[in-house]
Length: 263
Image (cartoon, rainbow, N blue to C red):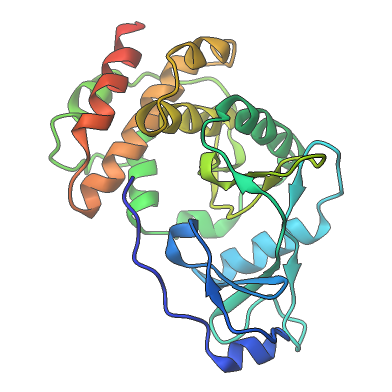
């Protein structure tokens, strides 16, 4: 999958603001934007409203035996951001993209805990390659990249009945496993879509990039609108790298055929 270049390390003024004492080290994943300093994870703020909203949600989210989350850390002045950066408590564990079923189960528990949240206003203002691809997948724009692999998927789109809610849009590499502890959900990009779509994105990612078996799709076929959610997950993933400069057909083509052949 396409990766963004690493961001510059947080400067000393940011470390001071969050009480971080150790030299920052780049963490894997997180689109090259997360840095560890001792027990803290620091990353640039995407937009101030999104940072404040996400921090507020996770700060107040009750503890549960079903999943863990990284808790936000306020700056010295009590705000959730300082000098264009935000901070989070480091949470133990390692991702394992070969555990797609466990990732989906953790995501379902996380989404159940978020089900009553209203739609935040900042989602309508977000404009980046991922948000543009997401809107294409949900037929909120017709500005599709000129990429042949998208055409049969766009033609296969049909209405879905599953209700939308706040979800995590990129779970597979952002669920951490630690023996004896619930899975931890990190690096949360929020979207307003059916919860099953987040599971479909996990399934598509696992099939395209981590050699998951097609039976993964069968195990989650009980989810409402499952095939349509898979189609939309593929549009989302393919349109994003196409926007960034070229989708990897060798990875996506077999999964596109598999999903479309399921009628």
